[in-house]
Image (cartoon, rainbow, N blue to C red; front, side, top):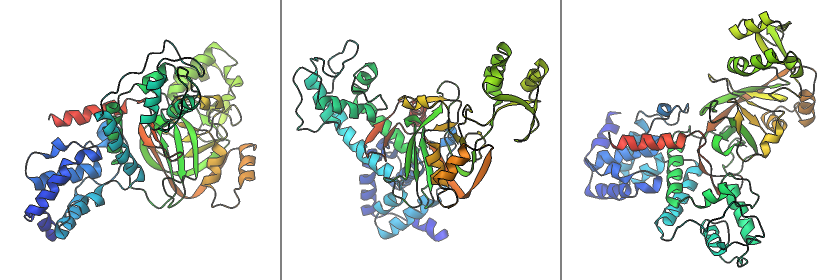
Length: 466
């Protein structure tokens, strides 16, 4: 330890100082601010840069994020820096401490491309559309729209489009653009698509920078299987052990917590088991605010929704009569309301458990029509998955007795059944509004539905003025 400290604090050669200044001047390439490293001794500025590159400039927990990435004690930075100084190559420390995720490198490339777009002259709002533009209709702004699609990579530069009418290859390009921006990919240019088309590149640059900052907070990828959910993109991916990021074994749409009151938290934990045909124990907030008022207005509400009032813990709790006294006891927490297993159950036919303080889990849903929406923040905080049987089969693939047929039978069986995983599977709920999708390898942008980008942007700006 003393030797490492001596190497870090040893006088630098002029060559090392020059290399450090060159690297610091290009800090913006990694979404950092070069002005943060222009004051003080170059040795200390470079160490500060390495720490920011490795763990970020803002602590995730200060913004309510429950993720824990690389340790923030500086040991890794000191070790990498000492080794680089000894080798006379500071770039070695940069390579060692930058996030190792392929997603980070892809966003770094995208950042450079969008910086060029932001610096180029001529970006202007497209020709206005009164309400909406549908395929086949005349449009005076065809030339400008074509240029925008080419610049953004949604239309080949040599593509031919009709003059004066919105049709053909240009419609397909807009559909690709809509898909990449979390919009209904119907080719109709309404208000949402118009707004997205007119977002200036500088704003996209900032989205990418904020996404890169958040990637520094994430735990390093292990060689184990993993499930990851990008909340604002409403998407789940699952990777086999050691698989490349570009090759997920499974992907599907998800529904997340509502933006206004019941946001899905950002955190990492480990899945331990799943339950086929689960009971749904109605949470106190939903019970008091939704279920009990509805049941008091409508005596048939509980029966119609396969709900019952029960006394005691566990699935074998005894039902009690739905009397006014029982309703009051449920309101006070002495009794509880649960929904019986079956097709009406709000959790669907299987739920996936990764024990956590927020009591968040993955589950199915009977409201499958919601997956057709482009924006899917409808839940009370848990994550509804589009294809529960496929997720169950992936999780149980190392247990030969649990094939697709047995999983289907368990989901349609007569009773609840818990199945433990052979080994815990890491689960990551994260939040990026700019990301290269493993599904198509393309850069996608999402709306900042929870305001986390805005909060991080404020925190980063505030720290510059302290």
